[in-house]
Length: 285
Ligand SMILES: NC(=O)c1ccc[n+]([C@@H]2O[C@H](COP(=O)([O-])OP(=O)(O)OC[C@H]3O[C@@H](n4cnc5c(N)ncnc54)[C@H](O)[C@@H]3O)[C@@H](O)[C@H]2O)c1
Image 1 (cartoon, rainbow, N blue to C red):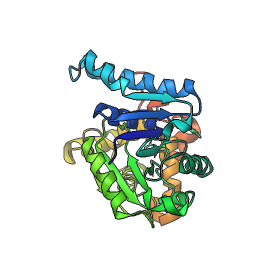
Image 2 (image 1 turned 135 degrees about the vertical axis):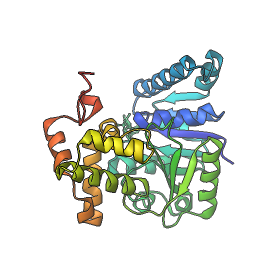
Image 3 (image 1 turned 90 degrees about the horizontal axis):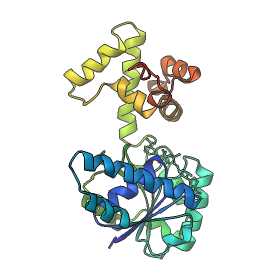
Image 4 (image 1 turned 180 degrees about the vertical axis):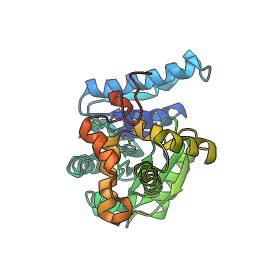
């Protein structure tokens, strides 16, 4: 039974993943390379909860109770009594490998270890833990912003037990997520759909069929999307999108060839909303 949840990496994804569990009553441990960086993760959680208070969704008392359930630490040893530990550190195999090796040694035998990787094979990551842990290793791919988006892809590795996949699916439902089981393939499910769609959207603009603004209108008013695909790309940031394109292109070939428009944006430093400009200009708004 999963009662206490650890999250390693208190960055963009980790802080919000930990918040999802704390919000639903789970005792949560949030770790980063130093106490100071881990603390910043909790500050981010507080800022999200403040916005929720302003919108009337929660009270000050709720915020205090939620944050009291989050222990922040620069010490990985504090994961020792967690039942589920989700890794959300940088997308670099060797860094993840070192985290998993340490977790495997620190965590109790019954603990499940999960990775939030977007692009590394879960089976390859599972190879970093001892044979006895391989049945308890799985992928849980949250979407950004993790405190809002309901989808979580659940990705069993080659040797993941059905019991582990079911336990993780159940706890994700408990925290109000919509888990979807997908095979351990490059891009999983979401990124294959998202990138195929946006690369086609880029081709429409490159061929002069319609403008980026009109593509966004097609998405919003024809497909019922809450925002246009180019507006979404500006939020997810083009350097990150291009990295994923390159990984998909390597795995699947021509249908994921990176768009010249995205390459130009990245070369020019227009990485999206975070730099003040991407397809759209945010500084001028
Ligand atoms: N950003 C997204 O939209 C998104 C979406 C889905 C999945 N992911 C995946 O989630 C993971 C994290 O991405 P992010 O965007 O939150 O990155 P990020 O750079 O915002 O955060 C990563 C954090 O990991 C910490 N870290 C690095 N090495 C560590 C270690 N050894 N121990 C503990 N902490 C360590 C860093 O200090 C940093 O705070 C990546 O695998 C990424 O592919 C990202």
